[in-house]
Image 1: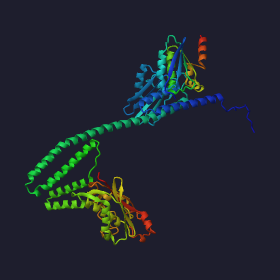
Image 2: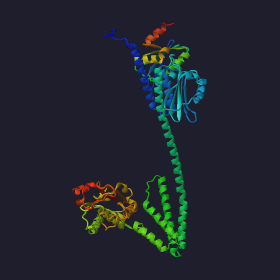
Image 3: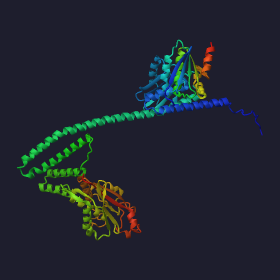
Image 4: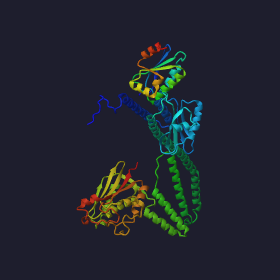
Length: 118
Length: 501
């Protein structure tokens, strides 16, 4: 299991794209906080979390994602998630994350749907 | 025969595959959760870290935004740890008060509170909808509280099963952490006490030096002034005082060596004890009004038996001495049919007094012969070994009963039944002795810097001290030949003499 995360943030119009490398564990809290803190919340009304297909989420990692969703909700931001393996797509569903964030198959799907949505 | 309607791959009693799949997924998820929690907690030793990680993992798995976990001391009811995540500040204060009103006693493990009970606990923040109490040990208990799931679903039966299992994992980790903390605290206390002890010893050792030096000076001066008086009036107490002063100096010196981490030897333990006993006897005799010649005789006798007199060391070739002694004493056991077999290597000289060494060699051979039946054998070896040489006297005799082996060097300890004991001629089988010889040899080893050890195996056919060897192998009902006897028991005494540096 990789221990550190590298998160690059790219602004694409109203979408802040978080490109996330590494497994999501208890050590991911700080990188996510920093990345979210660097985002201009006035501009970024949508946040897309892009993971690698081999990304592993342990139980604390799920909590980190939940915390991010809570913050985004407070700031009236929509959150989308892409790149998950089928296994973690199921787990996100069980835990309830899938009800608070949109799960997209690809980055392109997310950007297209958000561009065309009202 | 009744036929059931065939509805293809599903019968009426089977679940749809989607349901089966969902159930498998759920169970897999639960297993993953248990794996994650167990793995994370395994590496943690501090209670606070364990609680925090456990809480975050549990909240992540159930999709919960608020949660708390707390531990408390059962006796004092005081909260020892409280970790809360996702609560407002006002709710945090409420939690601290709430936790102290809840107390779990009893068997370790989780105790899930019923929903109606949780609702009645008004002192809990309203966000908390699920509470599990747990008991770590007789001194510690705690609670886990969780808010609603973010999806809004209630906690089902499977969730509760998983929660109780997770809490059991938590309890195990907390137990281990508490034991580690207790060990750490005990170690720190012992270290601190050890340091204090070292300080005390150092102080005592240091402070003893000056008074001892002063006493030595005073005694020297006193001796000079008393020289003109008859010695019988003052010499004995003076010598006693000087001997004890030297003992104190030895103790002070040894203590200094210990404190400076130098290697030291507990020197002359037996001979020191003997010295002290002799002094005590002298004092007692004087107090009881015994005259000087009586006291003198007591002292001389003890010195004679145990060789406490100063002896002059000289260079002695052990191999030569052993050969001479065997030749010398052969006539003394000519009435016995015991084969004494020397195996003597040439050796260098060692620096020890002659008389104690001669007594050692003679005594060991005599002891061996007296414990070996006729037609048996005794081996006497002198060998070079490492930076020294050893004298090994091995008899194929009756051996020493296990219970006696530890005490064989205590002196005056007969190794046979007292009723059977009698003083026969020297070198007779079972001649026995008062046992002082071995004690004397042990004292000599201390004084003259050689080691002296014994190993023995009692003849298996006469295991107890009341069992008697017939004294001749051919009359023994257990032995069909001498080899049987050689294999059945024996004793080895080994004296090792290091070469002078």
